[in-house]
Image 1 (tube, rainbow, N blue to C red):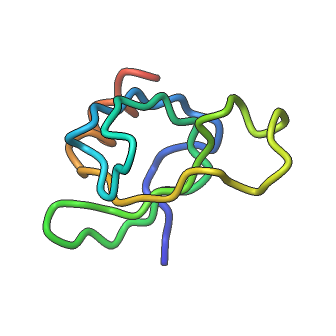
Image 2 (image 1 turned 30 degrees about the vertical axis):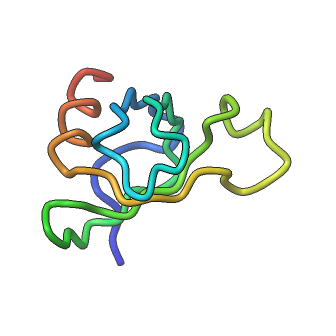
Length: 80
């Protein structure tokens, strides 16, 4: 797997309908750890943190889900 061009620590604001699975059904602010560049059905796997930047979390990541490629691209572009 190779990472998409989303630097670790990039804050992505994702809408609830852009995340699967999304058991909370809420929008999420996610600090990226890794976004894997193997899209399936327009979605990629992403790991990150919803609790704050990585140094604030005791785990390597606390968010793992499929996210719409278009959302990742939009948010990565916005963060630059």
